[in-house]
Image (cartoon, rainbow, N blue to C red):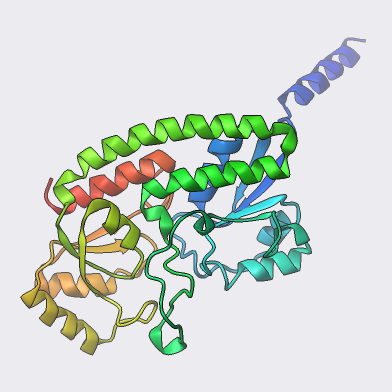
Length: 302
């Protein structure tokens, strides 16, 4: 009898420990959107991040684990603007989940909520890895999180009307805390205004616009095209006439071009997280920007 009672108690404890069923299964293409989905959805969402910090979001393998999680997703929250064009449509197709294909409410693209920069007049392969709709890396400017969070809350409410008020309430609370953080970040980053820098890849126009920094040259001849020795020699000539304080690169990028410039022009490289998990200090959505500013200021010797 004691054994029966003990087994029953264990069974009840296991049931109590089982997490509540989420109302929305969220397939997040990048960690920043997974974190934002958690801010908006709380316990009502179960978030799976398809990529991790330190991984190039342009190039993702359609692994069976990704396809399996995409199969059960109610919504995919992604960057859009063709950032995931090489892998997300394939994963959606192989999963058989029609809810998350283009044109369906189950595909949420963050770039649809903001004005994109660097929209090209025309696109062809000779220009490198250009995005027809504009530069997709909107997460590098934290101000973009406000309109994206509003749009995400509205989409979650559309997909899960029973919890619509919760999503709107959580978004309002997030926006209040985010605005306070924006004020703090902009005060800390004041010394960066007017600073000239080089970039390894054209990933940073939104951040540079936010902080008032100036891009002098990129270490790629065209977006996504690796630099040759001849091109890096041209970069060195440019830096002789237009000096920069440092080179910015994302944590996932090959450091060799930046190291070449550092060795010959004594221009240090600053590695930025780019997304949550890209560096040890970027552990969540708020510390992503804390760590970014800390690293930029360190590039100035502060």
